Structure formats: structure tokens, C-alpha cells
Length: 513
Ligand SMILES: CC(C)(COP(=O)(O)OP(=O)(O)OC[C@H]1O[C@@H](n2cnc3c(N)ncnc32)[C@H](O)[C@@H]1OP(=O)(O)O)[C@@H](O)C(=O)NCCC(=O)NCCS
Image (cartoon, rainbow, N blue to C red; front, side, top):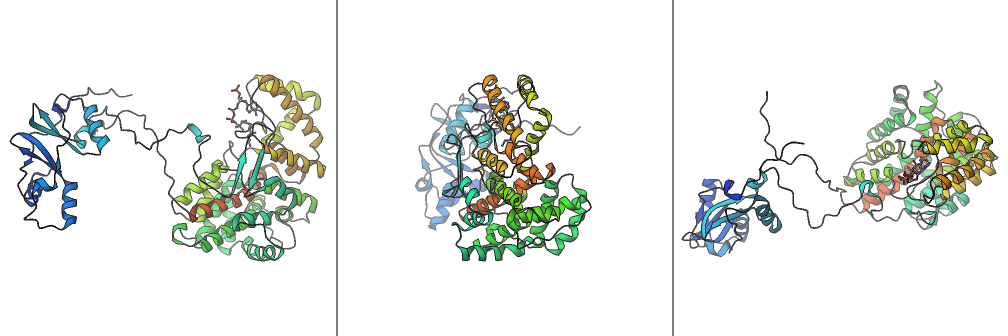
């Protein structure tokens, strides 16, 4: 860190002599002197004693009042009895006096005699001055854990109860009883649809699943140039917004924002499966209207007639991951929307955040764990060894849930229902992990999270591991979009602060070598 310069007193900083005015002078005359002397204030004196200060702000008030310039006297417009400091006052104390009152100039007085004036700008030249903390400023913990930053009607997570909901309904009950488009309607339009509303909603959504020609034509290059499907989808969503002429959310009404959000949400499964296929030199497959959401997803991935039971299982996984409180990608999408940017920009940001391994980028790692353990006999020794070495067991533990993750319980049931190949082994491993963690990490309350059984379900449905995270994104986009619509409807730009901890500014800028 740079050396902190010695802190001087105001006597070493102040401007002297001071530009002054008399109380019975006209404001016009004082203003002319301020302009000529290029100062932002004049100190009003009675002899050598300061009795007031007339600043640029007073001149603005005076100008706005529209009074006769020749008739107004300085005494009527000045601030009387200004706060003053002595020449030996330390700069920090002077700065505090200015900042706490919102003043920009403070007269320096020695034994009742005006000897100088010091300005905020003079003080800011001193490197060691600390900024004054804004009275409304709140210190948030790193990671914003436990900090409420918005109000939402989209949904919430109750970690201690092991419960989460979309609007007023349990998310797991919705995944059990409804189809994905019903929940989509719930999140976009506020209610579960009637049969007629469902048909109308599907009729609205279906055309948007077909990609515009301008996107389809470029997709092979995007697929070839991307190292992962997530990377390709990120680029393609940006292009989709551009070719469809998405405009800033700030400039459009709710109906247009909703249309944009519907189009992006509908197009993402097509983009994911198309990029996946193109990366294997296979042509994309057109979506089908006669299939449910999950079955159509399997169809677009494989181009083969899907097993409807497996399609339903994938759809239920997708339904459980639509929304989950103010997670990192949802927050990102809302921050971008809060700037008034377009819907595609917000979704691109969401995809970027979700692609990180600490958020959505790791569901295949839980399955890798099952492979690594291999046999029931190996489970305990493998896990004890891993935890003792300080490794994290993938698919276990959660920032919010300190009891069973409801998604894990639900997906375990789905995996059992479809007779997933790895389910029996996975259940043994789950119990062993919970036991080993309870022994070696007592009191941490570590249980299986969504990723553990999600991998088992997706694997059995025939999804390859590099489609796991994109499949998470395929439905989370609906949650992002619902949050985008909510943010745009009642917007205030999200703009927090950071504590500056570098060398004290402003240091003198060194001349070039
Ligand atoms: C999800 C996760 C990031 C939550 O992290 P967090 O809230 O910051 O919790 P912490 O990392 O502070 O964990 C608290 C304690 O439990 C331990 N712990 C947490 N998850 C663990 C796991 N999966 N395996 C072993 N130990 C674990 C930590 O080592 C820590 O122990 P310590 O108190 O001795 O330091 C974390 O549990 C994890 O890394 N899990 C594995 C990865 C995973 O499954 N991610 C998908 C999440 S949906």
C-alpha cells in the first residue's frame, strides 16, 4: 500500500485572502465579484468578523425568486452566522463539519478575524481523508446472504422448513399435478389457467418455439464456435433479441415485454437441442405440437419418438427448477432489467450466471460421484476418505436448506417411478453420505440437494451429461422472465455501494516517464 501523506491543518490548505462582501451590498454586485474572482462563495464581513456566507446555491435561490437585482441586499440572501473553524483545525474535523452539514465552504477564523476559507475541494486533495458514511448506508454481509433486496410475488424458498413455492402454490405439488405450461401461465399471468386459457396460451407459445430464419441460418456457426451448449445458447439468445427487434424494457409496455419474454422462454429449448445436435453434425429437429413439454424436449434432442413417461419425468424436473427465490441468476436478470435494458439482455445475463459451477454448472458432478464410488461396499470408505481430505461431496449441502431439499425428495420419487437404472445404488449412497457427513461434519445439517437425483432422472431419460445444465436453463428462463416482468412493472435501478479499501485517494498522478 502507498505511504499515507502527513495530514496538515486547514491553515496549510485554506485560500487567503478571502473574497468578501458587505451586508448592504447588492447581490448582483457580489455575484459579479464571485464570477470575476472565480470563487463559489463570498464571506460577508462586518469589519474583519465573518457574519454570513453567500454561496452559489444562494444565488440560484435568488435567481429563481425573480427579484429586482438592483434592490436585493446580500444580508437578505446570505446564510447568517456560518460555522467556522480555527486555523489549527485538523483536516478530518473540517471535512466532517462540511460533509455532515452538506456545506461546500467553511470560513477560517482566528480570534474573531477572518483569515481564510477552506473548500470541500481543498480538503479532498488530502489523501488520508475518509469519506463520510451516508446516514442511510447499511453494511451487508459478503454474498448478501440473508439480505432482502426486493419484494416479489413470483415465489420464495423457506430453507428451514424445506419448502418452496411458485406464487401461492407448493412448487412440488405443482410439479406433481400440473404440466409445465400451467406453471408458466401462473408465473407470467398470475393464475393457473382454465382449460380454455391453457389452449390459448399454448397457441400463443407454439409459434415462438420455431426459430426465426436469421437465427437458424447462423446457428451452425454458433454451435461450431462454442465450447459448451451454454455458451452457444448465450450467443443465440442475444442474436434472437436483435433479429426480433427487442426494445429496452423501459420504452415498451407490459404487453410487449410479455411477448418478448414468452418468445425467449419458448425458443430456449429449441436453441439448446439444436445446438446440441449441430455440435454432433446432426440437423436440428422441429418442435412438435402433439407432445407435452418434456416429451417434445426429448424429441428435439434425439429426433426419435419419445417415451412419454420419461418425457413427463424430464418435464417434472424442469418444473422443479423454474424458480428458486433470489438465486444468483435471477438476481442478475433483475439487475439488468432494472437498468431498462431489453429482455434478451436480462436472459443472457441469467444464462451467464447459471453457467458457473457454484450455481447451475455442476449437476453432472453428482452422477460422476456415483460412477467414482462404483459399488455399495466402496461407498463408506470412499466417502470417509473424501470428507477427511476436505472434499465437498457433490449433490449434498445447500446454502438455504438445512433440512431435506424438497426437490431432492420429489425427484427421488420420480426416479423410483420411472425405475431409473441407478436409483437403488443412489439411495444407498445418499444414506451413506448423510451418515458420514453427520459423523464427520456434525451439526452442519447436510442432506441431498436437487442435483443428486436430478442427475439420476436425466440420465435415465437419456440426456447426456453435457445437457444437464442447459436443461436446468431451459425452464429457469421462465423464472427469470417472470422476475423481469415484475421488475419492469415497478422499477427502481438496483445500484448498491461498495466500500473502497485501496490506497487513500487522491494521490498525485505521477508524470509520464
Ligand atoms: C451447496 C454449497 C455450495 C453450500 O455452501 P455453503 O452454504 O457456503 O456451506 P459451507 O460450504 O459453508 O458448508 C458448511 C460446512 O459444511 C461442510 N459441507 C457443506 N457441503 C458439504 C458437502 N457437500 N460435502 C462435505 N462437506 C460439506 C463444509 O465443508 C463446511 O464445513 P466446516 O464447517 O467444517 O467448514 C455446499 O454445500 C457445496 O459445495 N455442496 C457441494 C456442491 C453442490 O452440490 N452444489 C449444488 C448446490 S444445489
